[in-house]
Image (cartoon, rainbow, N blue to C red; front, side, top):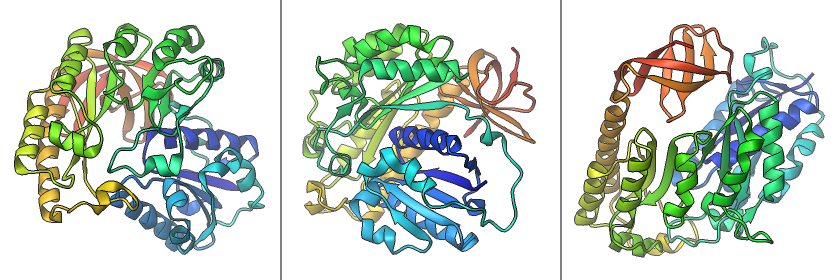
Length: 420
């Protein structure tokens, strides 16, 4: 029996696609191998959101080929769509597939006549039989045209999965024992706007409760320009939806947001976050923040840093701006790389402190969680409010729901004990 590995880069939508492929490959008799260097076929679901994402994809492909030159590498995703010739020139790559080929990817890989070529067979891992969380893509594409973003050009217009099909998939995943299902999309907040009759993420979530059964639902990134109080009223109060909200804020300076093509009235972001913190005080509140956009002044950056410091955000993903080919921002005067790097470093320090303070709030508390990983050194569980916790002993298998007591909080690490 041949083996496969799926390496995902980038967003939750990519993770959802990779999750579905892994299921389809196993249905076709292939065995999941977590180590790409020991696999017969490696499928790379690429990202091209930043220059670093491009570099990470190329570095991984070269590493796999160097470790096992006979491994066949199939690449798809946003980078493969944007620059297929660059990918095709990399060592070990046997196929570069556009986004349009993703629905047929499992059949394409199965047609490669996969045979065992790794030097020595690996023992089956727990991942052969069990995935910790389910990822379900319910929306793809984006109709926005932010000045810095290349994704609409490689993903296309917004497209939503019909509500009844989403409900059927959620019901199937819950019935198979998944206790957490992540709902993913490129622009999740636009869900349903393209459907006939028109729907919305708010109405979808209201309908998914019965389908989810014992499983909890977790939302991927939301656009704050659409994530108003009306949209968030239901998930913020529904115990079946994880108290974890990640917003694509990008910046806090009104001047920079207008230059980005994301104009927002002053005070909207702060009001939204304050309301979320009031309604769900124990929720993880995260944000994407883009630093060093062309024309960003020191005053703009200090406005962003001040916003982060005083906001109820509990963590942030900080991205240093890098020009993407074909985007309006790529033709603007760029800031010196050293300035961008230093600003990103400063903002990450501030975000790390927010994360530490958030986790410290739960020291000595018990939280609901799901087991997401196991090793000889213990297990990793993820709380409903998105805190990864290391536990030394855990009898529960991967994907099982547990109750964990937070015993120790360190910078970058939380330790606990399973109590139920």
